[in-house]
Image 1: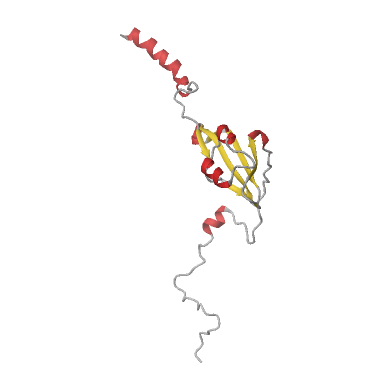
Image 2: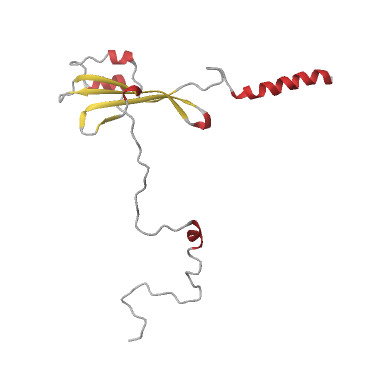
Length: 166
């Protein structure tokens, strides 16, 4: 009995580090589509010069957003993600489809942008100064100790009113 237990225990100990690894597609969650995903087949149905806003809305749904200063540009944004370690989302693909209309509401063009078209943005690592002091942790913890006296009479809330009898 003891001779059979030792190889099984050794095998389990050797295979235990591999328990966290999963083969692609096996025990991994499926990709999740977020936003308004536009298929290539749907884009083929859009014909510049004849398709109207109502046709685009019925085919693709309402846009994710409109251009800030141009109501004639609709934007459909989507991304495909997959959960990774710690519950964070790993981005597999990103896409933005811009639909352009003329002033009469007729389609003039379609622009498709992917993650490869994006530009890096640098984040500024500084804080905005605020008026006042920067107390330390200990000052914050002990800041109100001794500030209030329970036995003293309360001060008047009206500064124009005096406490002297007149």
